[in-house]
Image (cartoon, rainbow, N blue to C red; front, side, top):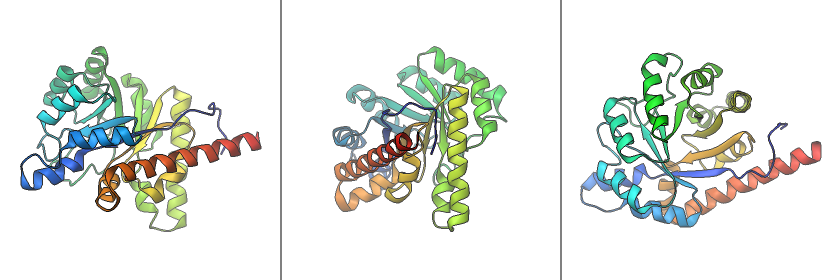
Amino acid sequence: MESSMTTGRKLRLGVNIDHVATIRNARGGDHPDPLRAAEIAAEAGADGITAHLREDRRHIGDKDIDRLMERIALPLNLEMAATDEMLSIALRHRPHAACIVPERREERTTEGGLDAAGSLERLKPMVEKLGGAGIRVSLFVEPDRRQLDAAVKLGAPVVELHTGTYCEAWHSGPEAFERELRRLVETARYGAELGLETHAGHGLSYETVKLVARIPELAELNIGHFLIGEAIFVGLAESVRAMRRLMDEARAEAEAEAVLSA
C-alpha cells in the first residue's frame, strides 16, 4: 500500500466506554463504573477515552462526563448530536474533542455517518463555536469524498470514517469486503490530501481491525462495543491490550512493506 505519509506515526486507540454505562443502567445503581473502565483502559494502553452523551442518556450520563473531566488524564472525546443542548454541555466542559454524530431515538446504536454535506447551514455555527472554545471538532461521516469536502467547508479539522459497513461486509463475501475496504483506503487518502486528520471507528473487532490499522493516513481508531463485550471473557485490561497489540503489529507490518517496496 503506497502512501506519501511519513512512517513511524503511532496509530492512537480511543476506547469508548458507553456500554459499561449500558450495563450499569440496566439495573440502576453505580456498578459497573464507567470511570473505573476509563482508568483501566488508560493503564492498558488507550490513548484517549470516548463517551457518547445521548439525548435520552441511555448510556453515559451527565455526572459521568463531570467525573471523567475531573479524574481522567487522557483526552476525552465527547460524541454528541448537533443540538443546542449538547453544544451547551460541550462548551461548559470543554473536552479535548467533540465528535458530532447523527442521532435517532429509535436506533440501538449509531447506524451511519452524519450528512455533513446536506447540513452545512445547520452545522457551521456549531463547528465555529466549538472550535472557538478550543475544542477539536470531528465529524463522524461515511467514507465519501462529498462528506470530507463538507468538513473542509465547515472548518472541522478532523473526520471519523464510519467503519460499520466495512465490518458488516466482512461476513458478506470477498467482493463486498474488498469494495468497502477500498472505499476506506481511498477516502482516508483523500482526507490527507485535503489536510484533514482522519480517524475511523464503529464495529471494529480483533478480526476487522487489522486491515484498517494498515491504512497509513489514519491517525486514530475509536473502538468500544467489542472491547466491552470481550472484557466479559478476558477482562477489560486484556481486551484493550490485545487490540493495542494488533493495531501496532498491523501498522508496523504495513510500514515495513512500504519501505521494502520504495
